[in-house]
Image (cartoon, rainbow, N blue to C red; front, side):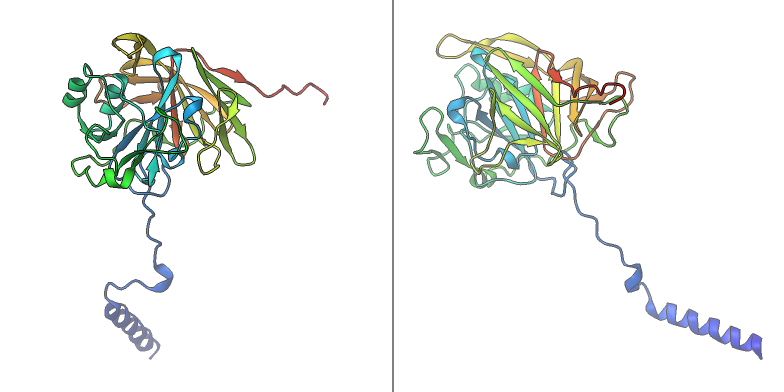
Length: 331
C-alpha cells in the first residue's frame, strides 16, 4: 500500500510539472540583463557613433554636452593649445559646443570606430579631400543650416558655435554602431600606485586629474581652475588615460601661419591608467589606423579599465604625479 501511495504521489507531481509546460515559476524567474555600453561598461545602448570637435580654450568654457559623452580625447593643436573630440554612442545631448574645426589628427583617431558621424564647424580647403576620403559622414556646419548650427548669443565668436545633436543624428543613418576599440573592463591591477593627482601638460595648456575620495572619481582642473560644464557639473570621471604619443608637425596649418601638429596614435608606446585613486603604467599598441588599440601591463597581461566615461589625454610628455605622503614609522 505504501509503495502504491509513493507511486501515486510521483505520478501526480509529474502531471503538474507537465501541465506547467515551459512556464517559469515565480521563484525561479531571472531578472533581465541590463544592456551595457561597450565603451563605458555602464547601463546604456551601443548606439551610432557621433564625434564632436570641441574648442578647449578659456574662451569656450564652460562647454555644453561633454558630461554625456562616452569617450573624450584631448589633443594638441596649433600654439600648443588643446581641443576635445567627444564620442557619443549611448546618449545624445540636445546641444553641444562650442564646436570648432577639424584637424588631420582626427582622421586616425576616429578610424578604429568604423564609420563615424563627424560634427565640426569647418576645415581648411587642403584638408577637405582627406576628410571626404575617410570613413566619415560629414555632419559639419559646411553642410547644415542655421537651424542646426547656430551662434550662442552669450558667447563670442569664434567660440560661440553650437550644434543641435538630435537633428544631426537624423542625418546619420549610414553611421556604424559602436564596437570595441581595444580595452577591457576588469579589476584594478596589483601594480597600481595610489596618487593624489596627475597633471598632464602641453606647451600652452594643462589638465589636472584630482582624486575625489567622496565621489570615487577624478575631478578635472583645466589650466589650474576647476572645470565645469554649462549645467554646473564638475567634469571628471572614474576612468582616465594618459597616452604618450609622438606629436609631429604636419603639412597643414592655420590662417595665422601656425603649423598644425599631428598626434600619431598608430604604433606603440607607454601610458598610464588613472582609476580608483591610483595610476598603473601600461603599454599601448595599434598596428594600423583601423585596428583597435591594445592595452597591456608591461608583462604583457591585460590592463583593465574601470567602468565609466573615458578621457584619453594624447600628449608627448610624462604626467606629473602627486603621491600621498608616506606614513612615518611609529605614527
